[in-house]
Image 1 (tube, rainbow, N blue to C red):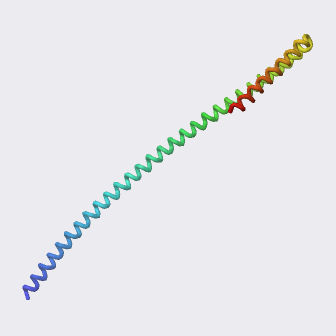
Image 2 (cartoon, helix red, strand yellow; image 1 turned 90 degrees about the vertical axis):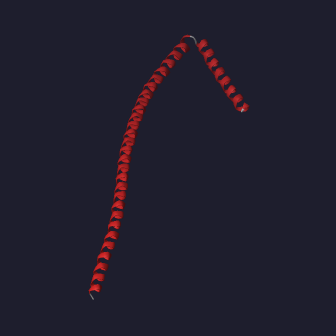
Image 3 (spheres, helix red, strand yellow; image 1 turned 60 degrees about the vertical axis):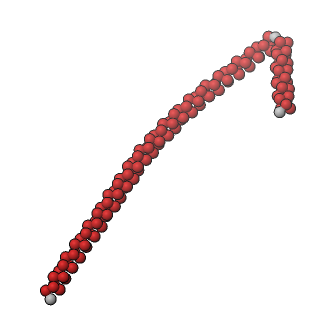
Length: 134
C-alpha cells in the first residue's frame, strides 16, 4: 500500500512537473506573440503618425499653391483692367485722329479706308487658301 502512495505521489509530482513545463512553454510562446503584436502595433502607430505628417505637409503645400494662384489670378485681373482702360484710350485717340484726318484731308482719309479694306480682303483670301490647303 505504501508503494501505491509512493507511486501516486511520484506520478502526481511528475505530472505536476510536466504540466509546469508545458505551461512555461506556452507562457513563453504567449509572451513572444505579445511582443510581436506590440512591435506590429508600434510600427503601425509610427506609420500612421508619418502619414499624418505627410498629409499635413501636402495640405499646407496645396494651400500655399492655392494662395499663389489666387494672387496670380488677382494680378492678371488687375492687368486686364489696366489693358482694357488702355484699349479704350487708344480707341478714343484713334477716333479723334480719324475724325481730325477726315476733316483736314478727306481724300487721304478715303484712301486710308480703302487700304484697310484691301488689307482685310487680302487677309481673308490668305485664310481661305490655308483652309483649302488643309
